[in-house]
Amino acid sequence: MEYTIEQKTVKIITPDPPTIKEYWLDMIKYRSLIWVFALQEIKTMYAQTYFGLMWSVFRPLITLTIFSIIFNYFLKVPTEKPYYIFAFAGMIAWNFF
Image (cartoon, one colour):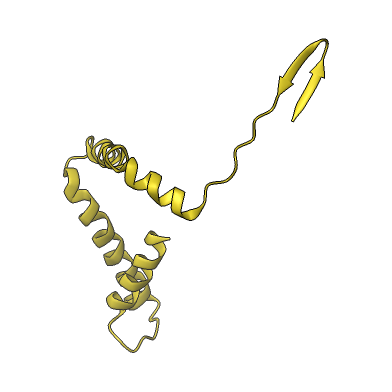
């Protein structure tokens, strides 16, 4: 697409969307860069914590304990299995998506 504005020609370049094959080939091509960004995110997320990387295990366990105490003992939510299994399955789905 070309436009003429005050004696100047402006060309607008629009990229074609990549195909799924091209997308995955780019992912494979730049996998080391993606790996570096992922490691940097993990390091910066847990660098300031007292427990470090173990905080990623403690935090869901603490949340699970609080949910189990509140919903199982105080509110008496009826479940067929033990409540902590029910809550843990919900937490996995919630945190994943």
